[in-house]
Image (cartoon, rainbow, N blue to C red):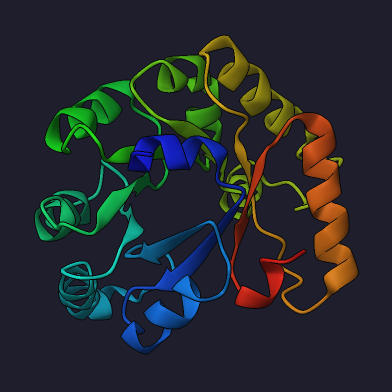
Length: 218
């Protein structure tokens, strides 16, 4: 299977800060279907040059996805310059996806077998969800924490129901696999994470973002 075919069926997606290379192999060994080396929120701005170097070095032999900064930030192109040609790059998770043209440009920039996941984290992104889903992505994902902050809502099932359902419907209309649900911030609370996973599955999500290896099995 190609990386893009793998992405269509992957259920657990584990984030790892890009400036913590000692955690990369541990993440791969966690049992997560896909590992995302993060160059965005998990890395302080001052540490991003180091993170890019560590991620690019590891992708010389290892294999993972990379979350890059949003297309409207100066860091976006710098991130892509660092990782786009790495042999171990499985695909790119585009943070704060809002612009379909930026997604199409990213599709042209990457090798054909590398995937793209569009991370919806704002009202603007949700408002353009149909166009983003049709712009060449392999899957949609929900950045629920940042989305809740953007609209001034609580980070709970009731407040985010409309947004979650919108992602599911947009994915279906575009012929994409079910989207990837946002993280559970209860890192070590098995029941809360399991309940969040069940709730997402009931809406039509077929994957979940994770921020700790302990969440992968839940």
